[in-house]
Structure formats: C-alpha cells, structure tokens
Image 1 (cartoon, helix red, strand yellow):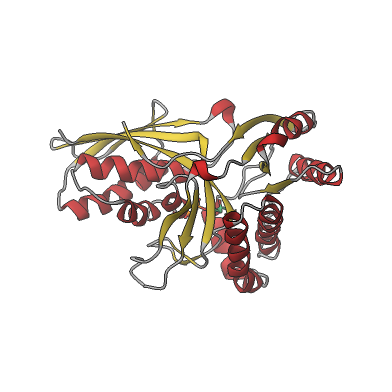
Image 2 (cartoon, rainbow, N blue to C red):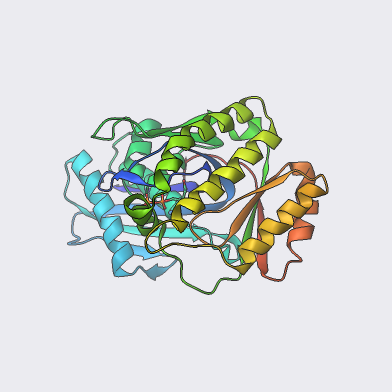
Length: 325
Ligand code: DP6
C-alpha cells in the first residue's frame, strides 16, 4: 500500500534563518539554531494512487486553497523524481495548534510531508536526507526532522547537499520553558518568504547581519553546551532584535511588531529587573516567544497573561523529532 502517516513538531529559531542565497533550493545565507517544541505539530497522511490525475490536498479537514495546494504539489514533484514514479497523491494534513496560537506551521508541515510521502513510496531516507528534502518545502522545516536543540548548517555547495540540519542536544538533556504568547493583531503580516527576500535585496543593514550572525551562533552553542541560560537568553534576544532591525531598513520597511509585541517585550525587561531570567524571541509576525527556566515559568505566565493585548499563552518545552504513526 502506498500510504503513510507522519507527525512532526514545529520549531522556534534561537538564532534566525533570514535570507536565501538560492530561492529554488531554499539555500540560506546563514546558519541557524532552533528548539523543536512539544506542543505544536502537524500530522500528515499521504496516499499515492495510480488512478488520480492530480494531487488532492486536505488541510484541517477542508480542501486547501490553490496556493497551498500548489506548494504541496511542487514538493511532491521532488519526491516523485526521487522515486521515479508519476502517481499523484491524496494528502491530508492536520495542524495541531492549541487555542489558535498563531504559530507559523510551514516547518512542521513540510517535515511531516517529507516523511509521510517518502515512506509511502518506500524510499527509506535517513534523517539527513529527509532534512535536505524538507528544506525544499520550507527552509525552517529541515530543522523539524530532529528533536531538541538543532543546528542548520548553511552549507557551501550549489546543489544544497550540504545544507542540512542535525541535532546538537537531545530534548531531555536540558529542559527550558518556551512560552508562546499570542497577542491581538490587526494587519496581515508580510509572509516571511517575501520579508526575507526584500531584506536581502534592499536593506543596508543586511550586511551587518551577515557579519555577526556566525558569532551569535557560536555564543548560543557554547551557552547550550555549558547549560548557561543567562548567556543563551542574551544572545537569543539580541539576535532576534537584530533580525528585525534589518527589516526596518528594507524598502519599503517591514515592521512586524504591534502594540502587544511591545507590551510583552517591556514586561519581560521588567521581570529581568526583578531578578527573573527571561528573554524574548520574535519571528515574522507580532507574536512573542518568552524563554525562561522551568522553575520560573508559572511566575512568567502569571505576569504576562494579565497584559491587555495578550490573548493566550501556551507553555512549551523541547519536543521530539519525527515520528511515524
Ligand atoms: C523568521 O522557513 O518560513 O521564522 O524558507 O521561505 O519557507 P521559507 O521561510 P521560513 O522562514 C522562517 C523565518 C523565521 C526564522 C527561522 O525560523 O529561522
């Protein structure tokens, strides 16, 4: 039977991937580092059927829109090439995101799709090969193959064979708390794909990003190695702010922050002045992830949840890599 189901967790970048050197192969300008999370995931079933004349994509029990369906079909073309087959597939994907947490889902989506589609065709890819494949659906998906703390090495080759993620520390070896804070948002955000392209092409600050991101990555890896939360938090927060600074210089400028984003950021600074070690990171949208030690997570939760623009908070911890169901 040409059918398989896989589950992948999403991930939050500690050192961000921002900018591509090759848009077709999803090759990044810089290496990045993430934690795979336990609470947000995608479960995807892929069934190839000889009688279909096109792919069919169900997303959260509804037929997906054209643009998402095209992304899935383009991705499956890579898989069909690998397997030398031309069958189409029915793909059904369920995104499990508690209480509409507003979490970007492309990372878990393409990691689960890579795993389910290749298993359905009995391709037997190892994790490295799956990471390279998932990357070609969405860059950050290459990190969601693995659990825990994960590095994505940007690689040098033009064919992308060395642009791959790997685990640097398993999820159970260092427990941290990641509070995913959803804030009320008004405007529709610029998709990260467009935001990074515009930044690379037009921001005078992008060079400053490239000149310092490797140093940030080394600091973060060293902090993880010696389990120093304070120094990890510092470099993680600074790296996120630096990424957003590159976007402010783009033409036209991109500002993902909204009132609630500032509110949470300022409250985290206030918590720090009271001696609680907490830091933020922010992706291509207004929501905020707050990092802290597990012993502080309730105090941080209780403080942040009272803020006027905060809609909900999901407390996450490092989660596992791919699983087959
Ligand atoms: C800010 O992986 O969603 O979250 O490769 O174009 O699909 P594409 O982009 P995507 O970008 C993620 C950007 C980020 C930082 C990160 O996750 O490293």
